[in-house]
Length: 101
Image (cartoon, rainbow, N blue to C red):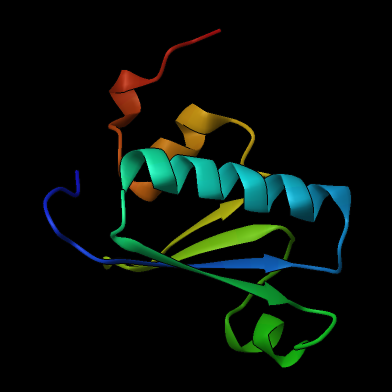
């Protein structure tokens, strides 16, 4: 798990202003405010405006969240509505800590 004053750099890839994009942005902001309090930077990359980013960063689906820092990079695909899976994907929670619904 990542602790302390580690800075988090997160890129969220979306396509346009869809409801899925809005949901992912909102869910990510809530999780970051609760878990990373002031230690994060979120960059939202709209692939309609910057399509080369999809190729450069090997994005195959949207929305996709890429944790750039702390290393190693991790990708999470989807609208980030499954909070526990996002926490595990970001490395903020261990897989064994998942609560099954």
